[in-house]
Amino acid sequence: MFSFDNRFARELPAAGVAWQPAQVPAPRLLRLNDALARELGADPAVLRGPEGAQVFSGNRVPEGAQPLAQAYAGHQFGGFSPQLGDGRALLLGEVVDVHGRRRDIALKGSGRTPFSRGGDGKAALGPVLREYLVAEAMHALGVPTTRALAAVATGEVVQRDRALPGAVLTRVAASHIRVGTFQFFAVRGQHDQVRALAEHVISRHDPDLAGRDDRFLGLLQGVARRQAALVAQWMNLGFIHGVMNTDNMTLSGETIDYGPCAFMEAFDPEAVFSSIDHGGRYAWRNQPLIARWNLARLAETLLPLLADEPDEAVRLATEVIDAFPAWYDDAWRSGQRAKLGLTTAQPGDAALADDWLALLHTQAVDVTLAWRRLADTAAGQPEPLRDLFVDRAALDAWLARWRERLAADGRDPVTVAVEMRCVNPFVIPRNHRVEEALAAAVDHDDLGPFDRLLAALLRPFDEDADLQRYGEPAPQDLTAGYRTFCGT
Image (cartoon, rainbow, N blue to C red; front, side):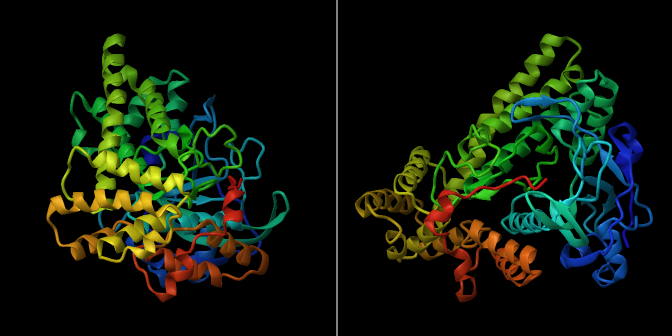
């Protein structure tokens, strides 16, 4: 089924607890990601058979797997918990895929573990399908992310605010190592374990650093640069993660944990959708600041590895943390220029982009459609964009500046429009469409809306008749009160 090679379990036995998934009464394979299965070297036809449901539900551990609940600590909304860990997930093991990349395969919702902290360790069908949809949408959008391999119904009921059908998600990641994994050992003074973990991450994610005297500083720099690029992509898509705790920031630079996440519609820098983010800590605007804060927590764990003298270690770490805003700004501005159709960097570009976003905010314009219709405008079709605005005079004044800037690059407008449509999606996981698909599946055992939405999300840059309903914003009354939940 899979050819496992479990380096994490071999090299870092203290970073997890060997554990078995809970048995479920009636596993039923709901969906399988055939393309991802083939990437992992597995035969989708085999996985779709009875054995697939048994494995993806946790009823049978496949040959070569070494299930373990990973240990980590974490800052959750700024408060530190010295022990969190996989309370409802298990790492089955690792495979080397057909491209030579090492990938984790993990179950989510597979029952209680030693880290469950009073929870039932289960997952409800809705959150499992939400993560499947949003993770695969992010992948199609070109954002580094964990992936969804399979969703299985368990045939049991889990109790949340009401009784819900249970499910298990199989998640694939470059690794599940988090800032919180380092914090787990550092808070216990286990510096040898921090070193072993750092060496493991370097070997896995930064192999060019292996053996270098400055490899641990290089690791911190590499993680910071990956996070700068990742968060810039989130920001340019209007994506709000919703729970940027240190246990949800990966060393690989992948997006992980799609609980209270959402894509904003009407542009609002203060947008928050998570039901538990009462103070707006993880609002859209704050995501780069929180990424830097989380990286500072990682840097603290690495101080003993950076230099023998504490003051020198702090100096080196501070240089990286202080460099993060510039790395982020470079990634953010590069993305903005591409979305604006610009191929060169000019001094006024930042102001042009900022004024565009300010215009969207002032007039509460749908951010995804605005960017998409700006591409139409580049092709000589401005009316669809103008129809989104109440104050068209303000838009026209900005468009005059933008056209002048485009002219300075001296490129063919049709080519510019084509390129803009390759970076400004038409289809995103709009909240009302996601909820529509989840309600059909949970309440009526109908996966038709899920399948149709997923098919649309896998074509985010296309725009045709079949996709029109997936590009439409939600009714304003729904958007105004929309809240997302962790799903635990």
